[in-house]
Length: 214
Length: 214
Image (tube, rainbow over all chains, first blue to last red; front, side, top):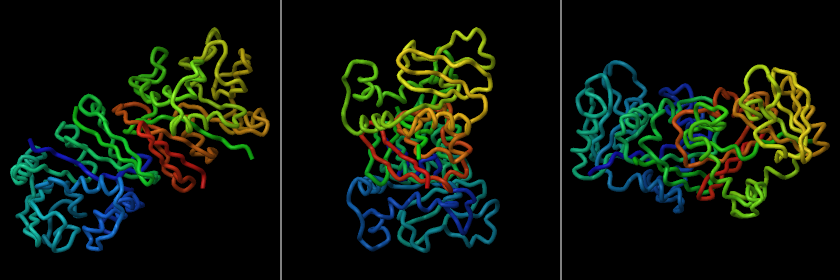
């Protein structure tokens, strides 16, 4: 059975996965980029951006897990772009340039219909207006037996957690204080009934927590 | 200069330092006791409760830090007891029996005046109605050159953090999900301006984070 997995979701010590005031010039919000410093230092990241360099320890091990056996992505609209409401002239094609680092089908949750966008390198963005279950069903089919990775933002992850549809959630707790921003664990009162944290490992730089369905 | 230090403040992965529905039968709230499992397993705890047993690794190292060079305590009223409003018949003398584990002056923040309570073993509970600065000043004097330890609850710690009066805050992040309860990092928007997390170390059981004044 294909799983729905969240990986490399970086959280500040005070519980925020994005800073305040997210926007086109600041997609991760004020101070949000430093949440990902640990990942930028890994070999996985070096491979993705073409330097081939980076650390090979525990942080890289967790970063690499997010690449293994993934056949499709689901993400919230805010992860795809900063545009709200109608798509307008449809010039926005994601944050990632002509050849996004997915190389498979990506299903973007939105209330506004739009035709699929085939990109270079095998990525196609599909826009799903029928809700999170439909997006997951389509992604599962597209994944062809592999798992589906769930991207952000936090609101999307919370929706899937509340519905009990996430199988595995990897959170990297970072030594960062943001003060304000978007919380991951917010309004998830029933989470303990369905989920358990069964892995908590520190690398020195960050601590990796894995939450799995009971 | 004497420091104000918080130690062994255990937090769930989802950010709660006490469960919901705290009361006399459930002083740590629903599910709150499991936050402290890591500490109950340490040699420090074994010494405190008289068994002399327990682990001696990283968790114990952090637990012991909280005992070093402390000359007085400050705590919120909810940590002293479950009684709200007036003290009534004044029969309540804390959660800890006749010989509390402090052995020095303890200053309890309250809006309701009460005479000091000398206990066995050197602990005296003082009740401070003039606010957090006054409690800290009296505790600093009582500590006689040693540091002052700040106990809970979370509301008290937040008050002192907002005032910039905490020098060191040790949080133990546990692999526990509570769903509901009392958050530590809540309404602390300006925390990053004054504080930095400069230690983050995992033991396997929990992760120890230390936040210090810049």
